[in-house]
Image 1 (cartoon, helix red, strand yellow):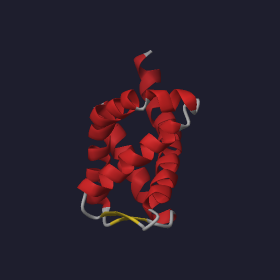
Image 2 (cartoon, rainbow, N blue to C red; image 1 turned 90 degrees about the horizontal axis):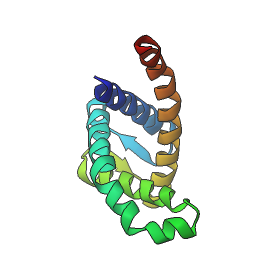
Image 3 (cartoon, rainbow, N blue to C red; image 1 turned 90 degrees about the vertical axis):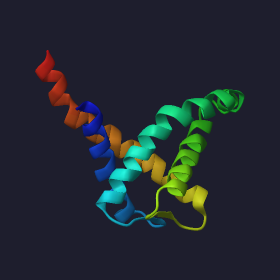
Image 4 (cartoon, rainbow, N blue to C red; image 1 turned 30 degrees about the vertical axis):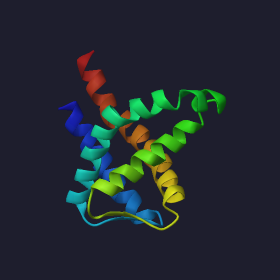
Length: 121
């Protein structure tokens, strides 16, 4: 149930950010849900491999290279999901979208999942 809640929150945040940010377009809410599901799979499978392969660059940049990895994950997601488009300077729009999505998800997850933690105590 917690996984579905996180996917739904990510889908809502992605849909709202696509409306607010220039260069990002998500066709409809169903596409946003698919974007969130693919993003969850990519974060679980591909992202750890990218982090492992780019560990020297990540250490050298004191972790700032993780922003590049997040932007690459967004670009891979846009490649696989039809209806999720990123405008021409793709990397910079993907970087902006990934930063904003991370911030929005952390805020909303903290608020939404806080109630579940209090109920379990």
